[in-house]
Length: 460
Image 1 (cartoon, rainbow, N blue to C red):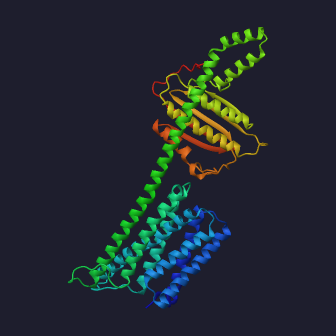
Image 2: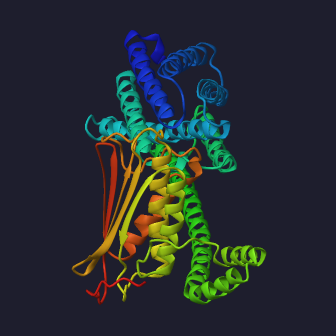
Image 3: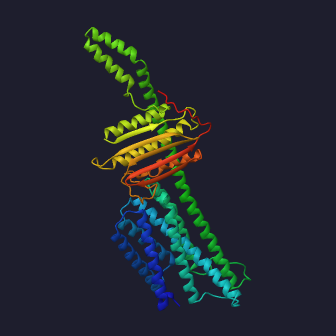
């Protein structure tokens, strides 16, 4: 007897499909851009489509492979039409949901069927039990409930996977997922024609059913493991490559800044001799040579004398460079940083730390209108045997914002700068705290130092 021909079966089917459509719509809306109205439209059309496909499948007794393929294509099309992100990202998001529904549903149906058959055989004593209509109700409800729970669980862990990637990367992940879904659908198609996996000839119907369901559980479990390993593994590789690329580019840029700052320092060191030479040209009234001489000095220095003297030339160069950018964009700047003479923090790690903090502070201020108060305040000093670094800056973030989110126009950089900072903090066993209060963002970092020096004289 068909499930959808019974009133209770219709009610259960409608309720389960509606709950799944809502879960799918919310999942897509979390990672893809759309309006609330379009999200509701997506839920309504997708729910209606599911019910229509079920009715056609039951009435015309269509092959399962045709039913599954049609529903997958319908879901892919709905996602592509009603959401606004890149097409590759939409297809990957839809493919993940299709894979979840196909594999989790397949696993749960076989798993719960095994439990029901064992109960009927052991508890009720039926030698060759079969699943009746009420048992089928229970299996359907448990399967849908588990699938919806898995979707909600995955939505918490897929943000790093579905945000900030290149289009080619999305496409690279989509193809294997759909291939695994096709294999699972073909397996389900085979199951509709009888027992897919058969045991020994002397086994009765009960043992063959158990053997078949266990085989399907193993297949779907391995498929889910392969999908999870591939998706999250590829994401891990992508993030590590991006972090390494950014780390190396930062180091190269900071080394260049150090050389540039060194040229300025050499120019300042020779300033006395330069003044004597300029005085001689002035006495001779040779203005043309004076102008040429000054131009050469400017070219040799390539940087104006700065106010930064932290005890570390690379940090000095970073502070100088960012201060000039802040002044150019009319952002108030204040810094007081003292690096201990015998600082145990590697110079490259200092580069990554200061570089990312200053970049983030400047970007936050740039997003604010010029008529608002925009400022950056950097404080760094030795506290007992630790180096304390605090950066305050104006921010448009609300106080309830989740730390680590981004408003960058280029989402490829999402979370990488903050991830680099966290890596440095973790490397030295430090702690980091972030908060937003009254439109002011504050990040505090405390790094333990080995053989900390309490003499905090600045290097001039």
